[in-house]
Image (cartoon, rainbow, N blue to C red; front, top):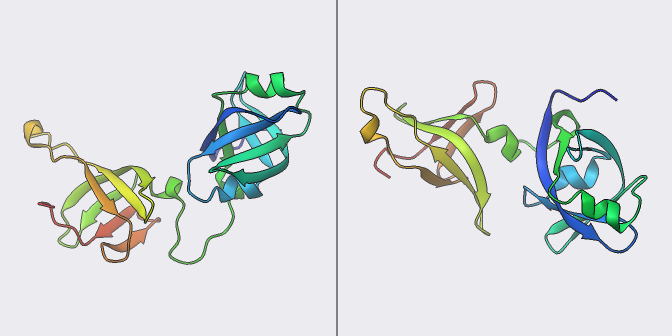
Length: 177
């Protein structure tokens, strides 16, 4: 099977689960939809290869899965630390105005005044909502005045538009916030 060109890392193997060769995967999103619904994962240990998922379910914040052909607990333990990736084209469809974190990372961020706030470097969850972690854009003319990283709640009050085509998020957020 050829390696898809749109692989997205959605978690990592954190250890074995059970005695028959299940694995425990720490997902990188709150709901883990991609891990639960996609039946072909790509694991990078020992080298990048496809695995078929027999079953996957949430268990204590992690995903526990059994893989076709997994040869017992020792084989599962050998995968500890491996990145788990899936093809972005296989992700489940979302409702309007919902976004996968992986689609937001790397987007430029501006405010309503058109001032550049930076780029989305990462996303995180604080228990109540998702948070944009915005890395500042360095000013080549004055690198010592580079703004600090911004953490902005990803909620309607602050997020005005998300344009994936233009790779741009517009926020109601001042430069001095």
